[in-house]
Image 1 (tube, helix red, strand yellow):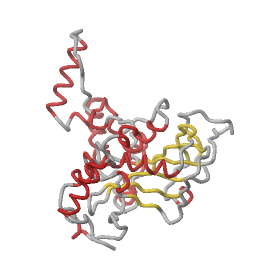
Image 2: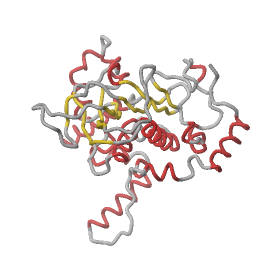
Image 3: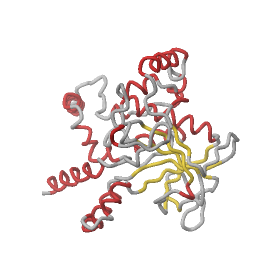
Image 4: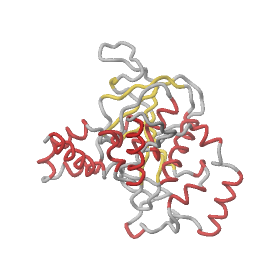
Length: 310
């Protein structure tokens, strides 16, 4: 009975997670687009991100955000908020019936939109003591947000930079990760690098989403501080079992051999596609190189711009 209940919860979580990170679509140029623009891209998005220089990664900066290139001591947090599309469903008359149970499941199983918050305000616990990295603390008064957004219109993956004071659905508590001394421009560069990493394999509601992006970003900044478990890591990473049956079968066989004491040289994890890559490898590799920029220029000559102009 408990096994059946677990499978039912996993299925329900998958259905809810299908809406994760799908926000209001915006075009590359920042102008709104209709459903007729869905096929604007002339080649697969994954091919675009392979040749896209880091500085050309789609990025939107909110009007009330002021970026600085000055180095100063700040504090980093990650947060989770309700998924916008789920909230809109729950606000309807039919959805309101399921609101208590669905909100409980979403919070329990981390079916939330994740983002990174950087603030000048230091963390304090509920007793006004200095918090330790990994602690949940009250939200700071202000800060800058770095988050992933996937456009439903043109299928591009964006880096959104927003102001915490005007952020909708800001949670009362956030997870503290540690101090940092990077400038806003350095953080934007890192965020664009990890957006490119998501885009190369393609955004996916289950396997490559805002939670994967945020966990990578956090680990790059604070490698020794554990992050919260993503939704795809729950139930023994069961969500990944269904993605590639051959890979899952090989993974299961190798783990069974290890259990029996049989030596196995290398067991590839089922979620290896979401494996963390140090930002130095991304920025110091082919991304932004002369070869990469040349490929991008040839791509533009052949296919032209990928979205309509303003």
